[in-house]
Image 1: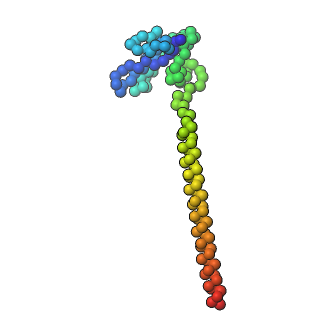
Image 2 (image 1 turned 30 degrees about the vertical axis):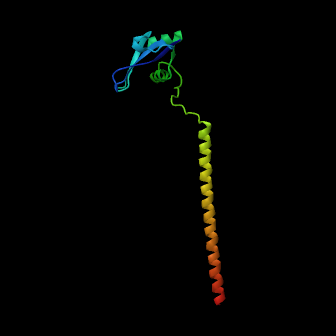
Image 3 (image 1 turned 90 degrees about the vertical axis):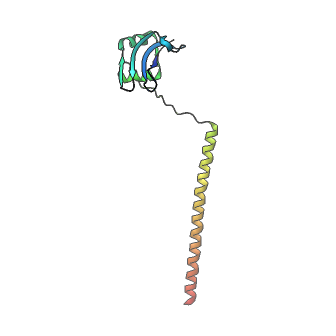
Length: 139
């Protein structure tokens, strides 16, 4: 199966990507790819794509990688929606349990605060009643 994907070249910290058509099973290392159909330089934002060759390979049955698909949609070569690349990882059962424990602990703390406040209010009310009772005894 043919795939249109990036082939990284360039020095360390100076990436340069060729857009190549290659077999999915083999990495395009060492220049072993069917055809180069463009390039992308992310440092200078320079991008050149051979639109007619890309459309030809897509018509033959080549599938673009997710990143190349988004690039082709951005450049208007193909129509469609972009593919979200940063997917949210599903939580494991352990992480869910940890979150539930944390939520319970926070709820318990809230309940304790409410209980403390109610106890304080009761004490204040008792003190007020005692003061009123003392004032009444004097008269």
